[in-house]
Image 1 (cartoon, helix red, strand yellow):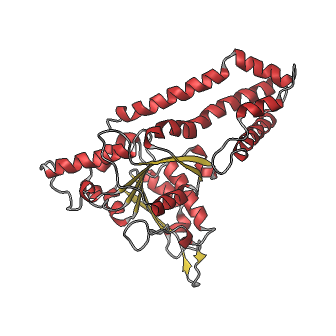
Image 2: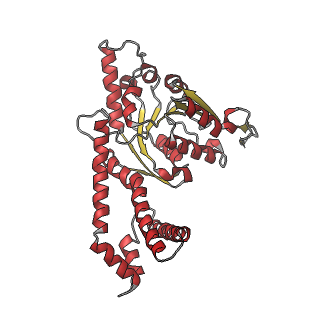
Image 3: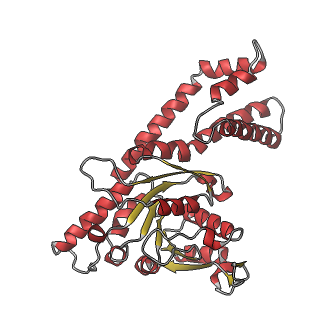
Length: 345
């Protein structure tokens, strides 16, 4: 796997994969979804552009830099295997050529320039390209690659290899993890292809490859596949809302501190209460995603007539807290659409 733009989120994903590889047999994560002998999660290339980033990543992954590192697991035949991490600077093309799976983890504003690089495009044939760039859909990535290939064929860029993406195809997945990835608690949203009229679809994702993608992101939490047209909305609900919940948590903590609690005690109590509430909702969902315990039901179960909880809820209702959260979510979703436009893609 080559990680292009291995910043905070790319690092969190790599951390999760490496942690998983310590616990399970690597063959359980390997798949044969494309036309290679296998795609194994054992070799990783972290690509960055700044010298200080190279130093930081090499320090972080020092146990994995040496192929003979002690961080190993045993296979069924008794042989020992070790995951390795290489840190490369300004060498995206070589990294893509060496990898079966490419994780595009750069800023949205850099997507177009990266994908216009001939040394990258000519090595994407039949590979898996996963993007975690906000506001950049799988269909948009396909369009960028297709437009560049068309320009190549018209003589704008003659350095492109013979196996173009539009002629031969690559598998494109749009994924959006959240900030809890580093704890293995991300709510990652995934989407493939496009339902947009007039936009050519990417290669259809085979079931085995979908399982492979799922296994990658389950290393950092849960996964949910949604239709392409719902990706922006789902991304906000899964990835932006930790900031909303943190805002609510901060307000509760301040209320406790004003009444004499220490900040640490108030934070611990409120955070655990928030975690417990979320767990009640999640455990109330069946295997087919039927909701058996709603947030409203939880709220009503805690309140008693003229009790302290009811009084607090009435204050929030008077301040239109629920409506504010709804509007915040709606505005954030609208912003996702505009982010791609502002990035020039």
